[in-house]
Amino acid sequence: MAAVFVSQLGHDTAHLFESTQPAPRVGDGNAVTQTSLDPSKLIFPHTASQRGRAICVSPQNSDLAYLHYGRIRLDPAVPRAAFETGRRETALLCMGGQCRVSVDGDHYDIELYDSIYVPPGAAVEVTTGTEVDLVECSAEVSGNYPLQVIRYPDVAKSPSLKFRSGGVSTSRDLNILIGENVRAGRILAGFTRSVPGNWTSWPPHEHAATLEELYVYFDMPPPAFGIQLVYTKPDEPEFVSIVRDGDAVLMPAGYHPNVAAPGHSINFIWMMAARREGEDRQFGVVNVQPGFDQAGSGLEASRVSQR
Image (cartoon, rainbow, N blue to C red; front, side):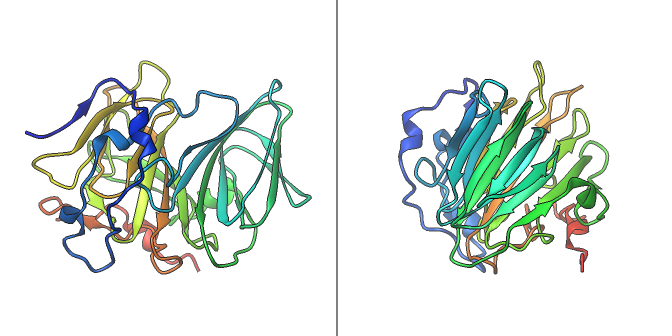
């Protein structure tokens, strides 16, 4: 069996090479089997370990074509971070604490699980008097979209943005922070929390023709861990690895189920970038692995119109 099990999370120079694989296109029924995965390029460990702002994953150091993942962690010792969005649309998701986000001189107070969408060409400053942990998700776009602040209480009231999916052994809560509720070109983002010991991203599904994805695990203090799979060949999975708090795993292609350790949850921020701006930006449109597709994808609640 050709599975790769990464027991020690330490990949360095492998991340410096850019992909030479062509992006699969919509309508290509063989997209999964035609895309090869290099398991050494799929995991980035300990991405939440430093203070300040850091871009952890980008097309320059991974096989992703559009998606950028960054982390902004501030406290009294490092209370400020500033950057410009350039040609990228950017979402900041508050996964801990609170802060003020200033965009071109306008100020927005952001609290736990709130998020803010910032268009390209903006100057951003983040400050806090306490502590904050922001996840940064961005992708280059050509269109113009407005700045938007997304309050988590509004997300929590929507049955198509916050819902429970799965059944016995696969139950989890999904929270779509940047979805159909936000005008954007490529990015989608949110977070999932499993019931302890359960599988998530189940049944196994993929969306390589339309969306690339990345998971970042959070709120999993030791000894909690999970096991993440990414594979295009069900009989010979390319990537199987233990994952812990702060690790990031990339899904440029392939099915990507995971499972929590007994007695613990597997919790992760997920972010996606559409391959075709606008047209491919749809949450919940997936291909379920044959043999596990009798009961749908488990994401049907997200397809209920919010308008």
